[in-house]
Image (cartoon, rainbow, N blue to C red; front, side):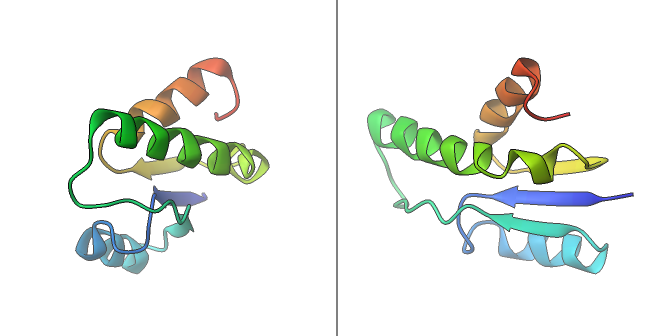
Length: 87
């Protein structure tokens, strides 16, 4: 069983990600830059960049059993699942 945790940058949700590391979750860090406070447009472009970087790794995401995604970026991942890029 393959488990993956996806987050936009390495500084995001550190405690929870380290807990998931103990449970043998594989990390996928998209390294999308962002600020603590962003406008709606900045947030939208951050998610678009994250989605493009995630789509570039879609073959790795096709063969997983558990996927953990943080925050509003989970809606982007759900959209990719509805389209059929992620199982």
